[in-house]
Length: 97
Length: 228
Image 1: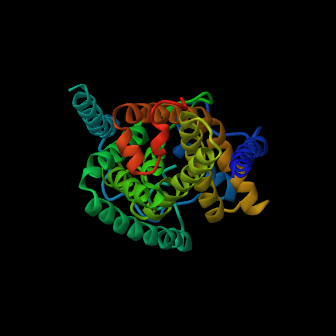
Image 2: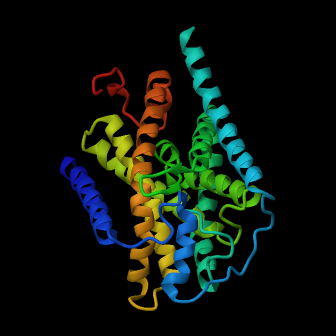
């Protein structure tokens, strides 16, 4: 069992290195502008297929501005952080008694 | 790893929904069963969901001059297994698709598959393999969430490559192009995710080892700090 475990770990890490190796030196359009990886990817779609791709469905609702989007992202982080902090604190306080 | 709204053409978005929906249904069933058996698991479930909430909202700048975000699903996968984590991932993705126009309703199936299913399955398997080979607990957690994060992004690249094969070179060529973007951006972020997840497990092991034992994450006799 022990060897199997190490074998799986070894295989997964070598696969990862292989992936990095085969994708190295690929030119990335738009990198270096601190753009989001998801956006970079979608820009590449047109490059790869040799034609512009038009999304066939629009978001139902979009944040009206970049500020509001940033606000909603930080809201998401805050909600998550409150819950994580609350329970860690609760566990810690309970243990202290 | 969010594929934007409407960005997957006709057969593919349905296909990924077809893959994801059974797992989600099974996950909801498992979640209900777990809560019914032990209602005290609810806070831990909330913790795992909230952890994914925080980490997937953080777009961290990386060495390449692009930004991306961790997934935060490693914690849930190690604690509860991939099926329940898929449900947690779906909640996060739904929030982002509806309120942030990040991801989308039509690509929800594909995004749930990459972040909620493929990543957690890899994380879960790697964790079990590491623990079975008697590796250090935190090193196992780190490796599992690190490889889970990478697996999510590999899956997204495959999904896009299948939907958009290159004019020259086909699916393989476009996979190389897509994964190149993530490979370099994501590696440092996956390392960060691994470290943070290991940190969370340090808290859990210190404060509530009983939860980890109950969920069979660690074995009972080893708790007393013999294998730090």
